[in-house]
Length: 371
Image: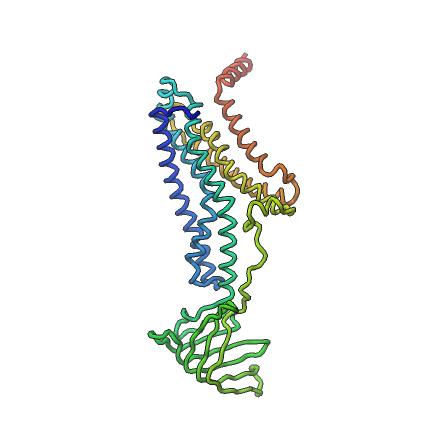
């Protein structure tokens, strides 16, 4: 039976939730900026087309939402509790009969739903978004686009094997006019001059083609006098060299059931990582209560700094733990539970040094040294 919440507990839950939303927003903005820069860099390098930029950024954001929820909740809870200690509200609450255990239970009313939501996103959204991303990139590799050809400039396609130059573009139809094309196929260099060009997409072949109209084609090797010359009414070139097929799935695109059934250690490592994400919400709820403790009206920056450092250590050890599972250094049955246990051990050590028992022991040790 869920105990009735006091006004103070409701206020704490409300403050934690507000802080969580604020931290989530900040982290999402940071991640959005990082992912956007990375994807736009791939566009400028010709690895992606501009048509799928929005979709790619959206899929990347879906992949990280569940992952950034645990640190967002940790920092939100940490800041809310630190504020209560700084303003002596914890002391007032304890004097009113509200124990830290009761406050911890109240915080779980926020932590547990966030852990469940994080698990749902991590277990389901990551593989779905990764698979959609691979399919989108595969289809993008199987097509190119001349709608972004700039008049008066040489535009490269197929990694430089196809170069298109257009004198101008008809603004009404979008067709290129007075077109020059250099095309390299099977080691032979072809040069084409045509009056205009346009493109079309073949859905069956999953590719984009360009139609050159009313022109001439010259085939030969530079420095040789042997050239083949042909005239045409229409000549069709494929703009891409991709197959449009999705390659082998990455481990991150596998569902939880597939990861569990797979004998590969990389799958076991991915499974362990996904499980550690929502469990980390509960573990860091404990850590937040331990690390937020401070004396009234004293700064808590030192503890906050240690808490942030602890989480970044946890975050990096997650990836290290994955590699250890892949390398069979750590049995896959253990997964990343050792890391969660390590975080709880840190919480236990901090609690011990905050306890009255340690203060008495320290005084005895100091007295023994002085005597």
